[in-house]
Length: 360
Ligand SMILES: *Cc1c(COP(=O)(O)O)cnc(C)c1O
Image (tube, protein in one colour):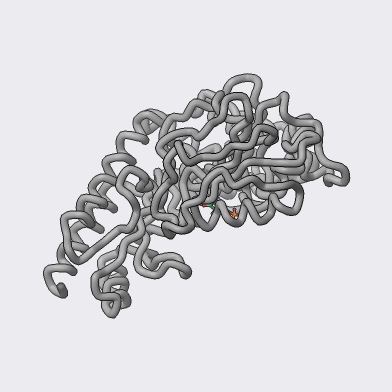
């Protein structure tokens, strides 16, 4: 058996130690005589697992007490509609930033429930930059402000929390949550699909300020109601029990690494090494304005795209997997979430230099 370096954007690599622990606990969790997958979600053992995971996440992100943490299903994409259903609170408008393909999807879905005011868009710049704050146009009657801190496909990242005073800010943190410390109190809500930086696909985490919930639009299904989910400990029905458990193991692993400040140091260094390799070469390029480059997803292209397939083949031969860029962008993309060790980035940088020396 060998575990290679997997640069997948999602579902993405998980820490090897976490998978080993899950393997060791697979058939008999802590002497319970059964797998976590086989447990009643309302039993004593699973309740302890679920509560511990939430406590560890709260500790990692320093989540204030007036925020609910929900462990839901349906992916980040379901949140594109659940957010307006829950957070419009009688208003008819929301402010959205359009900075990439995930923003666009969120906007499209929100438009079914309310008027969407585009605060700013970098579509004309091919989503390679974030518009200057001077050019943001907030509305004065928005229920919330939505943005995508890290655009997973474009590799574009905000360098601030865009805010307009009192209006709650909502962030799709699917590909950046837990990559560094954040100040949760600056947000009305944060959501993330688990399969990038939290755990396996099937689990979606929502962190929401408790005064914002309980005023859903008419016809909101109970399952999509944040308040009902919060009041029932995310167990209105059977939750994604195994994903929740694995997320809990990842949270423990993050604490063991020194928490999010320690992760931030490593993540910043990993990204800096990779961008330096790209910028110091005339063979590789990344189109994003440097100040807005993502720590987590690094797209790059080869000067000669005829060599793309050969680059990918050679990478796989030396154990560097899933570097193919998003189908809509082409080229390459290296996703370097928390679980990608620095050694993986070093190996990629070495391979890139070697490939360039042989082929450029
Ligand atoms: C992956 C991703 C999504 C979609 O996630 P699903 O869980 O597949 O719905 C949404 N937003 C961002 C920023 C993502 O990276």
